[in-house]
Length: 379
Image (tube, rainbow, N blue to C red):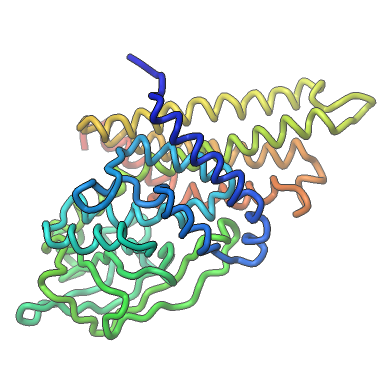
């Protein structure tokens, strides 16, 4: 066993950490207040290789592994998990193409992502089908060599900006997972319309919007997974990307920890800095424990993926524990700050709002426990 990071990893951390300090942290509060994604930051991150890091070299990417991607995620999340989510959401869209796409699809769409700073979105969620992916209602029907899609997707990250979408649909809702297929749909396809941008509690700097599909014709060349194979592709995509939620949670918790340590040294009550109060010390010590434990979980999950170890339960461990730990840590951070933690002049109220969605997207904390229990019971 070797828990040390390579010199390349350390260099990657330094690059991402410097970028976060210079380009994300200073604007995070304003972007949150304005519910605005800073596209200029996306373009700069793309230029220095922090976007699309897992695209293989043969398609113009840097060919990094899931561990490197998770390391980048942690560092960017320290500045703002909203901006981080949108900066790295291409990974959720490109993963199913990398896993199941044809050579032509990989060349076209992975090549597009690496040739210019564009976004792509992954679309499974619907008004009545979030964690229950098999219950989605968006339909497809085959007409000759083409497919026609009708339905609605919601809570789609970067939908307002995406150049193309990976969309999951079913031939028959009664078939559940056995009827699901996956398609790559270009933004300018007639009948595809992006709906309202959501006004969210947290991660307000990340774009989240609806997608409407009305008789959208998709050519056979853009069929990513045939009927009956789409559900498996969606689940394997989440297995690959859930460690990143743990990594984002780690970055957010590190920020909480640093803010609380600095504040506790300065803030005085009863004639002494609150850092000298044992209950404050206890809360801050718990934060440090959660940071370390979540980092170990997400790094193990990412290492498994990079080394071909098939163990999806570890990805669920990282996602569930990391998300719940981040929420608790952010709540504790507000408590450490007391009344100041409840106002927008201080950063921890934003951290608390941002943390909540980590327990919801890419499978709720409750769904993760169902997934874990099924694996433990051999289901």
